[in-house]
Amino acid sequence: MRDHKLFVKPSKCYFGAVQLEYLGHVISRQGVATDPSKIAAVAEWPQPKTLKQLRRSLGLTGYYRRFIQNYRAISKPLTLLLRKNFSHWSEDAGKAFEKLKSAMVSAPVLALPNFSKTFVVELTLMEKEYELF
Picture 1 (cartoon, one colour):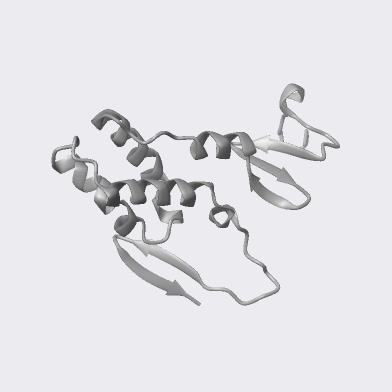
Picture 2 (spheres, one colour):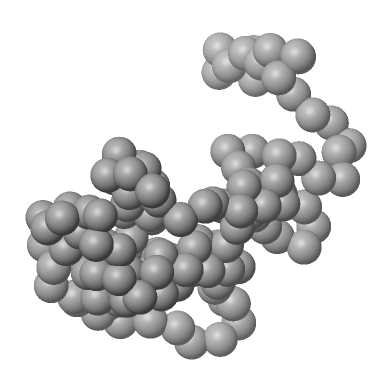
């Protein structure tokens, strides 16, 4: 490391650790998993009661939209509430909110590919899907 002028800060290093927490994930021999405390926080989200709370919820789930299949279709009843009167919370909006919460805490979001099997990587650019082979 000295030859290449690389330095480490010992207080930020872990040696011989069985697992470590990094950016909301737990990394171990089994792979990358979600941090249980983060999952619990999302699972306990209350239904938004104000427009500001709805915007916060959609903001967070929107950040992860590329990992949630059919995000646009799922979130549509909630995004319509941004345009219309928020006080009219519908059954569809409630189902959409619960479905987004469920998608946020499900492990497939963080699943790593099995490199011993064939898989397809889909790249989404400007709402168009391209498949790489």
